[in-house]
Amino acid sequence: MNGPGAKGGTTVRDALRGWGGVTAMAVVCALVALVALCLPLTTATTATTATQNTTATTRTVAEEDCEAPEKQTLSPSSADGDTIRAIRNREGGKRKLIVGVDQNSYRWGYRNPNSGKSAELEGFDIDLVHRIAEDILGDPDAVQFKAIPTDQRIPAIQDGRVDMVVRTMTINCARIADVAFSAPYFKTGQQVLAPKFSPVKGYDDTLADRRVCTAAGSTAYAKLAADQKAGELPASTDISTTVPNQLDCLVRLQLGEVDAVVTDGALAASQAAQDPTVQLKGDAFTAEYYGVAMKKDADDLVRRVNQILVDYRKDTANGWQASYNQWLSATLGKDAKKSEPPAPQYLRTS
Image (cartoon, rainbow, N blue to C red):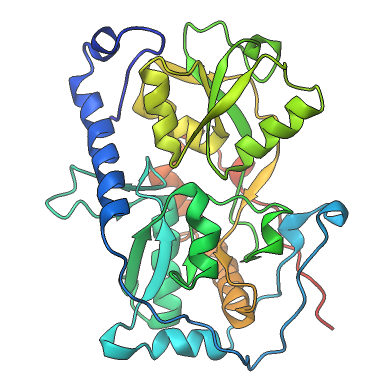
């Protein structure tokens, strides 16, 4: 399957010449994203209650003291608590897990227009969601997906619109003050994406006088802003272009409105697979981990997801490795070791 393709820095007509089928994917993704944002949200009952059967554990870590945010999670457990019971006992027959996802990140969470009339969500993150639903509700399809933009991931959790977010969400020190994370389920790092014939070589001085696009609320933008303030990124680099969804950056690049994109290398590789006129430039310049995000006081759900992740990684036939092989090996390589998170470490709770 191909996605959007156009050479940045040229006219739109020239950029899209020869890539009609590829461009169709960009149009589909853009329309799907717009529809998702316009559709009314289904009313959902917040899964958590004021009292938890398990003792709430303080997870707030001062950002200045945070050195390993991927380790700030609770130990695995299969025990049910109030959060999980609330999910199972939803009124009106809506016995589903409500999950915030992306629907336009190729191979992660996207609607495949070639999969039939329903254009069901597919990808690495979507596989994990189905596994979580199967464990908690006994049915992998007992899921209500909600497409949310990058900068709405945390508000959606805090407002109770979703039970969790599984959306290539990096665990970092700022975010663990607002939401609880599972143990890491994927390792990646920030990387530069630019047209193949661009003078941009990577995350270095070749970004001087260049326009860089990032997703609003992303770790990419936070990194660029911090590095520019510290003098580690050229002051002339224009980082003002931010968009609701990461795919919008690729479209901006194709239209010649920006010169480069900075995002997670795993996502950038998928975008390069969609558009053969762009490529990754230089190596990853950070080390980051994706986690499942949940409410701060949903201790039983956090522990349950961590247990599911333990079992998911052990399941060689239908677990993490099988999903990687299906969705990501074509863009990230057959050797999954560089993308596997380290053995999880958990907070001490006693």
